[in-house]
Length: 258
Image 1 (tube, rainbow, N blue to C red):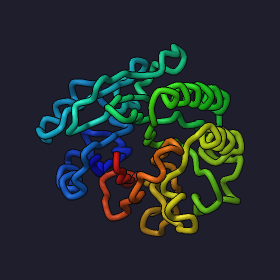
Image 2: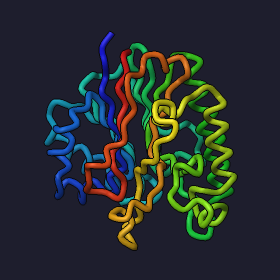
Image 3: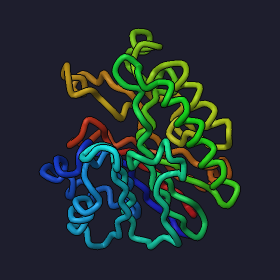
Image 4: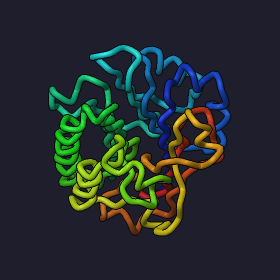
């Protein structure tokens, strides 16, 4: 058994964040495994950046539908038993949104959940995605425990969003359909680790670049580590790293003995 330090970060463009303090910040957090979302680059471009962190192996997924859009990666010091990309559901496998690494005792899934879009025009698609993703991770959970991390693009409860009333059923990421989709994922056998350890703490992981939102802390908690319920006793801490900049999201972390 070893304590693993896991970090998850929506970087909002790997080519952009690498020009900032990204490498220094990663070294300060010292993750055993680093999961990235919204890399906005092709596989080769992400792998080239990751060569600057030679102690890690990188497993990268990128959008097939639109270049420079979406994209996910798992960066790890421990070589996985196997790695898969996407969910084997054609409708949902076009935008490079999922990477799954299998290790001896667990699966690590990183995900960049689709945004419901301006005017909620993608909300119906988002609901189909939520169901497909839930089915996917439940199938993994039948084989061994699962840790899910990423930008799930939903604030689950009022405590997770600065302006709940103004955004409810009006803004992508805080509609009842999305909230219900997230709740169904929890009900299927997973725990929101940060809220488990910090039931009353107001802390956000995303702030809109407009309106000076981060300085005023008008934010959303939409970046998560979820874990199979069977792992909860092995988790030491779940963290939101508000001190790190470089993206409109900050990193989130998990320490687990596994």
